[in-house]
Length: 219
Image (cartoon, rainbow, N blue to C red):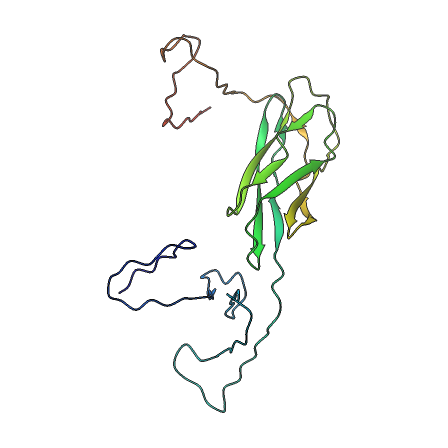
């Protein structure tokens, strides 16, 4: 078996006696089949010229009874945004986590920024949330402040995603943050503060937390 490692631009290959050749394509047969059941190849020509496409059955089969269909088109870098909506009420003085994600298309690997709208008074968030280059998801938070008004009606904030793709600003509707409402204060509340007592408990239920600790609260 061979270990295949991509080389940086201008990096010479190791002199190990094995043949060296360039690969200008990548075949996506993802186990989740996020490109459908067919193979998907993203090809960037190294230079201008004529190129040939060879299609064959991966099982070594074929013949006049086998039918194949191939679609050749220019790459259109882009993204499909999505939101994992919040399903639970927002406790007054606390909040909920929300996950945003992107399906990257045709080689787009840049940053995607998610923004939220239609937040009523007393409801805050840490948006805009950014999905960093090369990543597929990020998490944000939406919370109700301590003195939030009694919002009896549901509200539904909307989330949009935008990115700069090949010099153009592209914006997409990502989805709803959920049909939300404000609930009573939580019975337990965790607050993380700077500890000036060198990690020693200070009483009143305070516990020191180290960087590798996992916190659980049971009611």
